[in-house]
Length: 319
Ligand SMILES: NC(=O)c1ccc[n+]([C@@H]2O[C@H](COP(=O)([O-])OP(=O)(O)OC[C@H]3O[C@@H](n4cnc5c(N)ncnc54)[C@H](O)[C@@H]3O)[C@@H](O)[C@H]2O)c1
Image 1: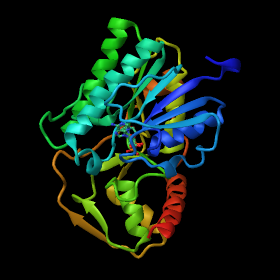
Image 2: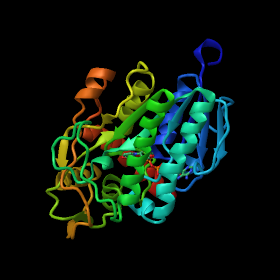
Image 3: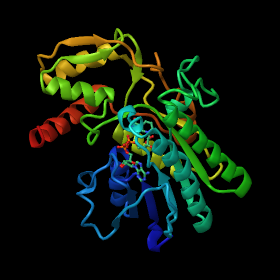
Image 4: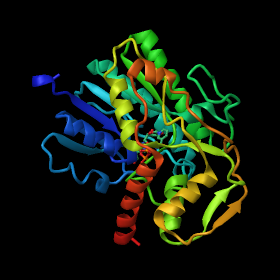
């Protein structure tokens, strides 16, 4: 720890959607940030506001290779999060989760850093209980097209808890549910960004299935606040802890809300559901409420409005 409580903090995947917001937040709090990213799905544009800061350093590096830096805390976010990107090179996706976790845990052990893993609600697979609590073990297909992501993240959780039990590392595991906001990729196939881009272009909005499947959507600022609270919680709080918004919407409701907020003339078109697509996914956030005094605050309309503003500007610059 540096002077005046200033910490040196490593954020892997720091040039991505969530990582760049996290870097913003840590720099704003006065900390020194080392952002590590191989720019697979992240971009320097996401962190362009930070590159001039003397407190911020960007290193282009792939977390599947070891890294040696002196830090007090590590947020391990490196991993493509959208199916289009994580299925493009599934072997690399598993390697990023598993080798990435091994390398970052090894680093945390060497420099005695506290380490947080960005895990995912995908560890619950296609859940048979609703809403999902952290005690649910999940229903995951080990050999399907989504397995590289789901099983990679499950294995990373295993590694975190083995380092905790075996080597007494200070660990934190967050199971993140669907999060949206500015800096999502315009063509990564995730539902919020897809719908907004289609609506802004007045193109038909594609709904997979009949649109009655539900999702819950957490705005990025709320999520980052949850990660920050978890990292700064007492050492005995390790997680896994669910972070997400428990308010459920059907996919059809989401599409209709976006059409109305953008004033779009888009119609709805329906296509078959992809393999292993969960019917419903909703976090039980009782544990986060109790242990972190955290819950999402930003309503869907407000978050969507900010995200639509971001995408309108992004599409104007890159139509
Ligand atoms: N956004 C969500 O809704 C959500 C939900 C659950 C979990 N998560 C997790 O949060 C983390 C961040 O997700 P995101 O939505 O910001 O996705 P993202 O794709 O925008 O960010 C991931 C970042 O990791 C980088 N990266 C990928 N492989 C790497 C490697 N081998 N070495 C170094 N960097 C690498 C990418 O370039 C990118 O900048 C991921 O671990 C993801 O699994 C996100």
